[in-house]
Length: 193
Image (tube, rainbow, N blue to C red; front, side):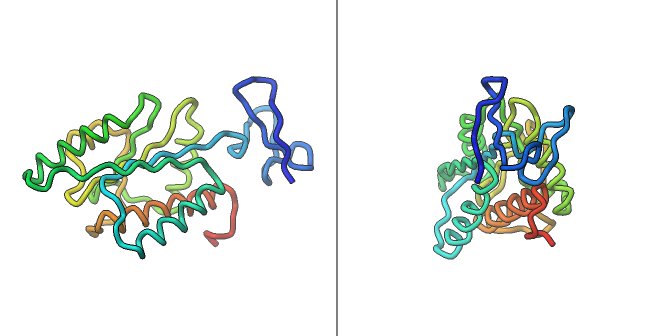
């Protein structure tokens, strides 16, 4: 059983276990604040909805699993108009994405040419983003044609899910699974061996 109490600072809420100084399996000393005591929030902005039932089922599974570890906000934005050429369509989608981004967001674009990380490396990077004071990691997934070059240039980081081209629905599932895996690594959960 966990107790919730207000800490000394009104903005800080601490989750306590039955054992003093143990926070979800991590010892706390006077110089560190356990990640588990932070209100962890992850934001995902996607172009397009998941249409196929099998992708929806997979997404639902990982969203439920992720919500055990963090607050998750997924925004699905409309695809750009189909009558436009691909570059103009990406510009329209980029404007919609930028309208949903706040100044506190750490923008992480997913692109096939982005930096590939191992799961432990991603976990380390996610942990640092989550620990950034007053900031929220915001993962951005483009539509069928990807993201505009301008949006990618403005991002804090560009990650790749590998050199293969993936359908954007599958890319979202892979992102959700890898975020879940990263959080299980951070929390020493046995999901990632």
